[in-house]
Image 1 (cartoon, rainbow, N blue to C red):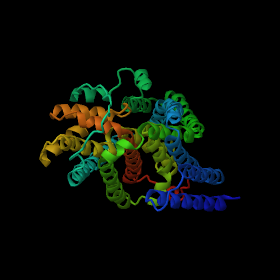
Image 2: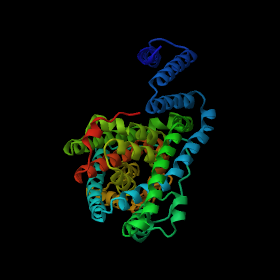
Image 3: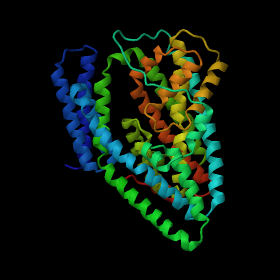
Image 4: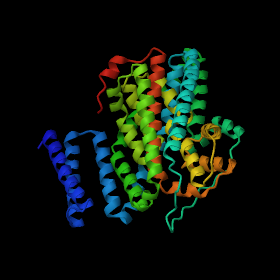
Length: 458
């Protein structure tokens, strides 16, 4: 047996299982559910064999997602206990965030002593972020106005969800969140932007020192950065277990009942995100001459991790490492990616604009497009600086709904499928930010085309 034969075996078992499931779904014949379950597990076994011969982390992650889905369907109660696996993975990843951001930013700034470039990257990044997120906002509004997914929505009988508590955020709160009052506190809470601000200022201060005094700290930061990338490689071996556990919990918790009443909203979001990725991000990649095929390979791992765990943070270390291999200089990767986690939430912005109008439609409230746009812009601004907050999008949506006099009961329905929507919007956030790092590198004239064209996923 080799990779090619195991691949053919996987394709064959998938085809057979699909044929029997189609026969059963369309009532061409009555098929024993146990037989269908056995067919699915045979396919999974062949998929695991293929992953073994493929020896690719991405393949293992995608395979574990399939296993997670099946566990959630066949053993929902057991699947809910697998949350511990995803929690272990997320905790391990969170230990990387602060040291990897600090070390790479300090080396990127102080190692080159080009403070003017830091300023240039800053304003270029902000301009790019705001233009792209505004386009995402408009696509979300257009999509929900075309599908009218909220019209006629009904909450399933007996459905109960507890809404997260939320406090209104003023613009002063949003600005203050950017600046750390205690760097250890920011590291403890995983607040990305305050860590970035501290690291940038620290790097600038270090760059202003004499060579004799700068060298020890710079050497330490370089060693720390390399160590954390090795640390990331070790942790990523646990990624398939964490990802599989996360998917199993989601499927076991949600089931399929509530999806039927909210499938229109779910499809609207996924289609709108596909339009955004294909129409906007794909066009940007072409305009800036980013090799698309190699870029897809570079982002496949971080996107699959983000999709399954619904956490951008979990994908950050491997995204930084892969983009550096893709030809984006470390100093740009370490600046643009974490900054984008606050200012360039493309998927979240699109979701918020879409979900806010969905709430109004479900309540039978008519909003003019101008009002919708103002509400969307409010959501986009209040979402800045809350990356890393659990279910931050939902918290922002609740606060904005209260501000515009919208009822909260439709948000309870959204909460039921929030995890499935979070998977998609988080994945698009990661794609948007990794592309942004390549765009800024090209804009700075430092994108390495040879490395990009030669990129091969490990």
